[in-house]
Length: 413
Ligand SMILES: Cc1cc2nc3c(=O)[nH]c(=O)nc-3n(C[C@H](O)[C@H](O)[C@H](O)COP(=O)(O)O)c2cc1C
Image 1 (tube, rainbow, N blue to C red):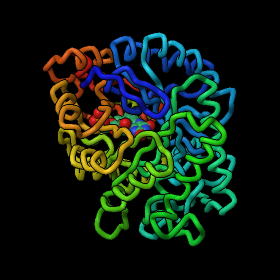
Image 2: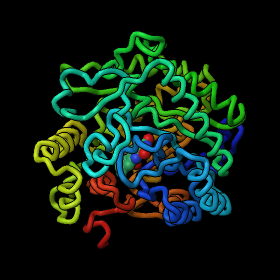
Image 3: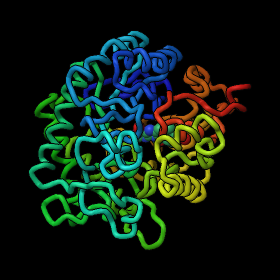
C-alpha cells in the first residue's frame, strides 16, 4: 500500500509518504531556492512521495517567523523554480503551503519587525477580550468585507505563481491559529457580514479561495486544505469536532482535492507539534539572546515563554495523536485524507494505510534529524526515528533560524 501511487486531483504521487510542512527557514532572498533544496533534495532522493513546503506568506507582512518565505510577488515565487525542478528530478512531487499569520504575525511580537512594519496587523475581528493584554499597543486592522475579497484574490494569485514555478499544487494553511483558521474560529471571528456567524459563513472564505484558485490557476490545479479541530482552555470559544467533520464535507463539495485533519489549540502553541516545551528559548544561550533581541520587554518574553510552557503541558507527545480524527474524516469523504501528527515508525505508517485510516501519511520533525528518513520508512526498517519531540526546532523557527534538529543529544548520535 505504502508504495502504491496516489492520485490527488490531477496529480499523481509515487507513494503514500509525505514530508509535512515544517519550517525550512529559507527566507525569500536570492539563496532561498538553494536553502530549500538542501533539505528537500535529500528527502526526495531517499524516496519521499510528496513534500509540502512550510507556510509561505501571501503578503509582504504576516509571516509568523523571520525565516518564513514570502510569495507576495511573482518574482519571489519564481525564484523557487530551480529547487522545484531539482525535487521533480528526484521523482518527488512538491506543494506550496500558502499562509498568513493574521493576528499572530511576527509583527505582533518581534520588536525589529514590529517597528519596521508598514501597517497594522490584519485581524478577522477585534482581539478577543481575554487576549487584549497580550496585544497592548499593537495596531490592529479588522478586515473590511471588500478587503476579504481582495485577500481571496491574493491567495489565488499566489497559486498561479506557484503553478508557474512548477509546484504540483498548493495547500491552504488553514489551521494552527493562522489567519484562515482565525476566520474559522468562533473565538476570533465575531463578524456580522457574510464571513461571520454560522460555520458556513466562517468557512466562506475557503470556498471563495477554492473557486478563485480554479479560475486563476486552472480548475485542474490541485488545491488542498487543512481542517482544524480546535482545543481551548476553559472560557475560550472554539470550533469542535462536529464542526470540523461538517467542514470536511463542505470542503470536499467545494472541490478541494485533499484534506489534512488536525487537532490544534486556538493559540499558536505546540499542540500542533506535541512534545516538550521548546526550552531552547531559555536554555540555549544563542536562542535566548535572539529572543531578548526579538522581545526586549520582559512582559512580552514572559507571555511568549509562558505560552510555550502551557501549550506543552496541555499537549504531551502521544504517538499518532490525530488517528481517530483522520480515520473518521476518511470515512466521511471520498477525496484523499492526509494523516499527520506523531507518526514515527514504518510500522505506524503501514498500519494507518492498511487500516484505510488515511491515504497519505506525513512526518514532520523527524526529517530534521534524518533528511533521508524516507528510505528507511519505505524499506520497513523497524528502528524508531531519532527525533525525540524536544521541540527545540520550534524555538529555532520562532527566531528565524534554519530548519534543523537543534537537539545536541540527537545530533550527537
Ligand atoms: C518547527 C515547525 C514548523 C511547522 N510549520 C508548519 C507550517 O508551516 N504549516 C503547517 O501546516 N504545519 C506546520 N507544522 C506542523 C507540522 O506540519 C506537523 O503537523 C507537526 O510537526 C506534527 O507532525 P510530527 O509529529 O511528525 O512533527 C510545523 C511544525 C514544526 C515543529
